[in-house]
Length: 228
Image (cartoon, rainbow, N blue to C red; front, side, top):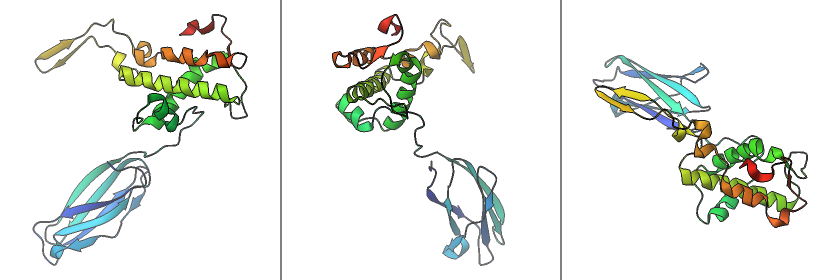
């Protein structure tokens, strides 16, 4: 599957063919814009190709139209991924920090996981804490910044241990049938929101209550760190 920004060669084989065979490729992008990239013929009109630039994510439509000998049409749909998407919001740890925390190479989707872990801790933990921040909301004290980075890395490691980071594994179903086969599962299974994947990793509390943070990071909640 191509990603946004990729160039890929679309090909077509025509049979039968002769010197009257001609082909045109019409490309429709996900927003409906239509283009006709230059096509190249080979093998006397049997093979045709064109380079397509997938400039944005979504489903692209490639329509070949052949005239002359071998006349006909061929329609192909190509799903294009978003490629590397810049994270929005605050991200408290880098992939280098994660690699050092895990003491091994980080997963290929480490940037996405770190961004999601940062959002999770922002919404459920850090909003209950008090510490000095800059205009962008990032911690200004190096010890606090390092502790929050470790906490984010701990959350990513937790997801790796439970094998899920979106809570899908916790979603239950009562029964399902496939042909003559019927499967069932207790409907008391936890929901996605209650699954281990959506819980705050135990190590997060340890990272955010380290002795060197005394007077630099405190919890607003009167129950202290019992929120975990």
